[in-house]
Image (cartoon, rainbow, N blue to C red; front, side):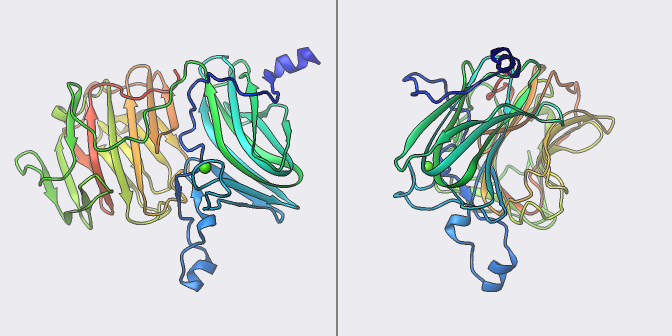
Length: 387
Ligand SMILES: [Ca+2]
C-alpha cells in the first residue's frame, strides 16, 4: 500500500500548519477579487444586476450540479478574512471549486492549506493535467466543524508532471464556507501582484505610458476614436480606443524580441465572449507578436515568423465569462520561457520558446473597444514562476 501511494506520488494528511511557509502562489486565495457574472435571462428580464453572492471569483473556476450551489457571500461576518469566501450548499448534488493550472518544475512537494467551517465532508484532490488524460491523486477528506478550522495537505507531483489542478469538492451532503486557500511549493515565488500603484521607470524600461499627458505626435500614430478617460482610482487618466481606434509607435525602439516584459492594465468595453479578436499589445504582420483575447475568447501571447507561430502561451476560453472590468496583464519572454499572467495568475506558459530575431516595425497599443493604462515594456523578465 505504501508503495502504491509512493507510486501515485501523494501524501495527504491533516496537520497543523508550520509557522514558516513558502509563498502562496494563488493570487486570489481569499476570494476578494470578484467580477459580475455574465447576464442571464433572469437578470435581463428583471433589468437588475446579478446578486452580490453570484459574483465570480477571479482566477478560480466553480460549478455545481444536481441541485447543489456555489455562492460568494459578500459579508465579512461569514468570511474568514476580508469580505468574501466561497459557500457550498450541497444537501444534494455536487459542488466544485478549482484552480488551474499550477506549474510544476520538479518533484518538490506542494503544500495546500485552507480554512473551512460547516457540516459534512470537504474533499481535496490534485489532478495531474499534463496530458489530456488527467490523472487524479487519492482524495483527502476533511471532517468539517462548525468553527473555522485550518486544513493542510501535501502533494508530491508524479514523475513527468508539468501542471496540476487543485480540486475542492465534498463527499455526501455538505454545507460549508471556504476561505484563504493557499498552494505553495518551496522555491516558487509568486509575482509581486497586484501592483501597489502606477509603475515607475528604471534602467530596464523601454516604454512607460501612463496616459496622463497626450501622446507625442512625433512618436505615435493615432487614428480613429482615441481619447483620454478616467482610469482606475489612483492611476490618473487612461486611454480609450473607440471605433477605428488605432495607436502605434516604433517596435524597434520599444521592444526587444529576445527578452522582455509587457505589463498593461486593460478594460474591455464589451464582454469577453463577444467573438471579436482584441489585441492588447501587438506587432502586426508576418514577423509578429500578439498579446490579447481572440475571437474564441482564448487569451494568449505569441510570436510568429512568416505568419507561422514560433511560440505561444494560450489559455483556451479564459475570457469567456469576462465582463467589462479592469484587469492586469503581464507577458514575459526569454530563451527559457514564455509566461502569461492575468490578475497575477500564471495562466499559460511555454518552456524553451523559439523567439524572433527580427519583428515588424510597428508596435500597436490596444485595439478598438478597450481602455488601457500604465503600460510598461521592459528589456528584462520581471516576473517568473517556476522553470
Ligand atoms: Ca476572504
